[in-house]
Length: 462
Image 1: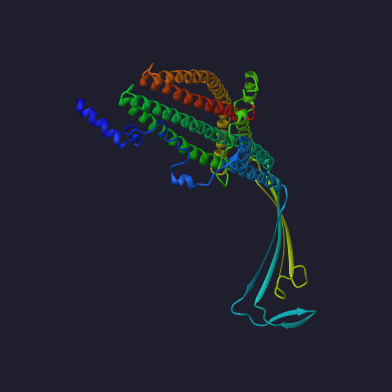
Image 2: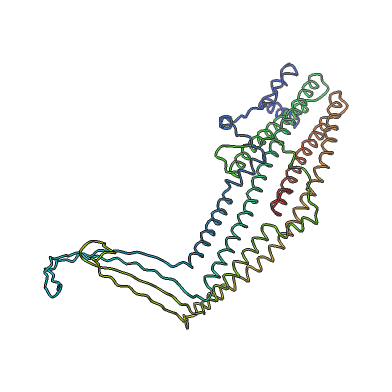
């Protein structure tokens, strides 16, 4: 068994890139330095993204985000509906004209003028032109309620646009902070690789001096390989995060975070009591209230189906065969009509009843949605505040933990170099440092995101 283990270690060393440094009498400083350039040729050929600040990312998201553009489109449609509701009070006006050719052509025509018979040539063409206008004089208030409903829908659309704007900003901030987190992870991976290479140098020196076994050097080689893998993963994640940020802000060119944004970690400037008041007027609650106003107006519109209506229409037309479309001249014969009508709805196969029921159901759902929106806003406030406080405490704790772990690693590294400690103690200390770095990075990311979620919830900067 001992012979088999020795053969395995020898075979492993032969496949490790740094094995020549261990098997041959090379100098300790022959260990390669960290390779900071991307190894993937595809990534290396990609254009460098343009750095943008957090303020620029937020501004781009407000203008280019898909949900923001969709919300703006709803607002434009609502504004057009308001104009249409006002237009219902204005009479309609239309002009029509046409020409008819008779086939086969008829014979000569006669006309009596002052007792004399006049023979006219055949005219197979005849023309007509009509001007018509109509207006509903009384509709039981339907147009008024429809106007109120259109205004309510316009208000709801504007509120929805404001909410979607904050959602777009939240998404942009999350992706921006994600870039910062992975960039910190890349820096931490570089530091981890540097530590592993320094450790490998010390192991090589101790093995050559006979103060350590080949196991120490092999473990150090594995640590270097793991550190390189961690660095490669961090760099790839930075590339992916940059692409996600570019999409979130709707940029035509690749963008990346400009750097550490110190303002993103500043504490919340509003007290908890004020946050409770703000959440009562949060964008989600205001949107639910606006939707309830729309449903209430729709309920009134549906009830007008039981009220009689009065309509007026005027029609003025002319026709002739002498000249095409000679409307307004003596060549046409003219006639006009004014028509007043009223309609009393008696039975329409329960269509009105169905409309009223649907309107009542819509209003009931809107009331429940408003109540749920208020409860959900308070729930989200409690959750986001808890997340922020936990992350803030973790940042404070992990900062101290990382400082302690780095000091312990420094001591263990010195002790190992002079033979006062084992490689296992050094590796344990190094693992603690790496874990503390990653935990601190995650805590910073969670704190930034929790604050951004609070801002999106209350609809203002904190």
